[in-house]
Length: 125
Image: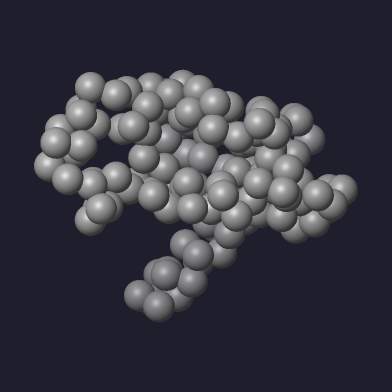
């Protein structure tokens, strides 16, 4: 599945965390009419909480302080709309530099490999 990595300033990270976790279909504050309107809003249906994502402090990637990186793994159609929604919602959001993207991808791959090795050990693999 395709992957995208975005950079955002630390000043917006708390708002970004809420944004990523929000699922309008689970929001008890929305009434039935508001939920029906979601179907006609293409960006309202870009729900990050239903995708594979990871948010890391730039220091965890060995990068300069003050930034966070969002790793997003989803289908191409979702990634196009996700980028549009991120860039509209956060003034400091942008596509991550190649160096940060490569580091993040390596970290995620390493974590997945270790997790798979652990599951194999549990089940005698």
